[in-house]
Image (cartoon, rainbow, N blue to C red; front, side):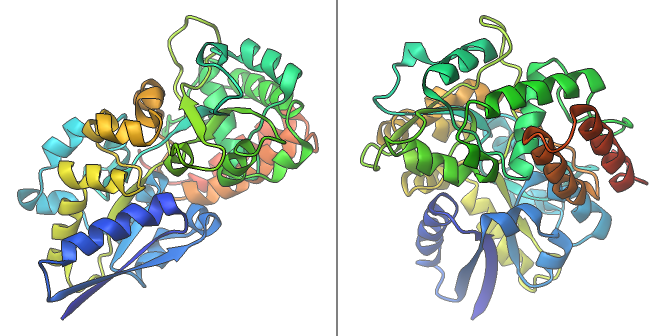
Length: 381
């Protein structure tokens, strides 16, 4: 008997579809066992992939981890197994930049199994589609009337700050620069984020995306969030207080989407795995067209574009995928240098303090630049 132990994060979006397709995969493989262990979202966001990979055969990870993987050699490069995988087909059918986000220094460190970015979201019945703000001015006007919600705890302040930098004309991601965004865009983004926070409940400074989904689902809270990593289970027609998802607002009405910071996950294999062939075969199956659709129907959030356009899947989840597709296609990849995860932790605290008014904007911009310089020393893009 061969056993693979994998690690993922603790939410129905992450585990329900994965467990369903794993059970289906194992029916015809009596000599193979796959066990999934879950960890909290907080640990998922901050864990060292080098440390985690020592204890698991497969790891579901966030794309900024790949710089650490490249530096440490802790993960398998899927390019070395390209003959057993349809990487070209997967790339052609992966939504947005999800596939590219796991390619670093010429190696493929994970295969995309889940895709998301920051969308707008609102409670069904609270707003009509034509009332959704298309730009920041519209968000501010709506917020003054009825309030809004945002996830602003730690790195979630940072993610929305990055998205607002794109709205202000300077998307993050230039890994070879001394600073990740211009001071002008960073200052403007913090100004906008403070304006938005002023329209949120004060407790939003402690919210993560799951908290915002739960808040929107209840009629006694805000109806709308302009920037939220979408979780498809909340879009089910039979969900309590079902939510609808759409495009994130841009800077000006009628201007093309600036793009928001993508999330999602990839499936990686530890270099210490004793059954790499079996793990590669499973990864290939999980990312195949039919299995990705099945994963979505079981409550996961697939990375395949064909699944995002599937009529049955969209009917089941209130057009979650079609409604948010343009924003997903214009998504922005975060920096991925070795040291970025540590930078992200420090930068999240800096961003949260600035949004809450505990730190001046100019000081926060200085602190972000200093943290980036400290954590990115010796990097190569």
